[in-house]
Length: 365
Ligand code: ARG
Image 1 (cartoon, protein in one colour):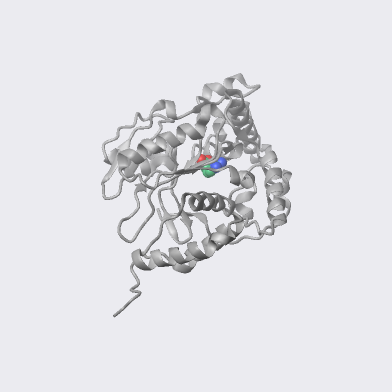
Image 2 (cartoon, rainbow, N blue to C red):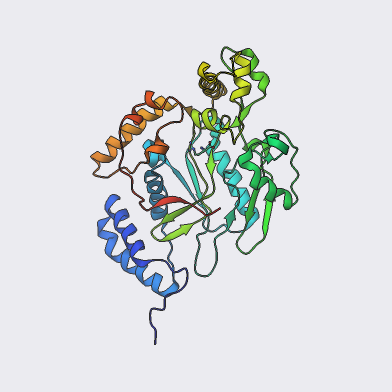
């Protein structure tokens, strides 16, 4: 008789135990460790999986942030609010919980880091799926010869939502619906209520004409296409958010040529000579665009941080982690900001990187 039949999708026992060891050591509960580890091994052998206690889940979700080597904003990893919604698995309930997540995270503009954890993958049932790559995203409508509208990064979801019956207004900043597959359900779309989506219209402190561009961005970046991995368990539906660093919007989302591609329009507004690269019109436009983003969020009372402040905070985080006897894994190419890189202290050194668990890992598109 085959006693320990390996099931497909069964949780790796050793990974579970490694996580529990770390959890008990870091939370000062070493006395409880042996009994819990035995119980979890037994649960995995019997059912192919196990359930995290609420404390393990909270700790795991926070350490997953701490281990995210691409994130410059990890100083506050302990403050992550963890919403345990593992019992929620229907599409409609998941959508409602995502809306609730956005309200709690938005907090009237004083943005709070939040993660909502839905049911994990298991040997019996697959986890629910959130098709959005962020809870809030703008639609992208492709056009001929680069004459599209909206955010090209939103095109795949716009296509999917449209196929399911959603109708976009064809604007530059149409908020996409959530597209959710509850456990054992087909994909459905759910509009986000307008009062759950805080947005900031962009103006410039000195250039009155800037507001005429009609630009805006949303307050809460809530990543929803990464799987939270803790102790061998996978939570593919686990949207999380922090607050924005200005360059994400001003030097990437609005500036990248395969996103809103706005540097030429901003340069025109500034009266720069765009025929000659050596005028550095791109660089000057990018700085003013970033000034507009930071200024507008501040004026609207919405949490945002600049890359100089955040770079310094990251180095304090790194020093703090080292004092705690841990390596702080970091990926230079992501940590260094896309604007004025060498004017920030994170540029001038190297980092150790490591692919630790718990972590938030990208799911295949
Ligand atoms: N870079 C992404 C964006 O611009 C958001 C990624 C998460 N960012 C954050 N500050 N937590 O939408």
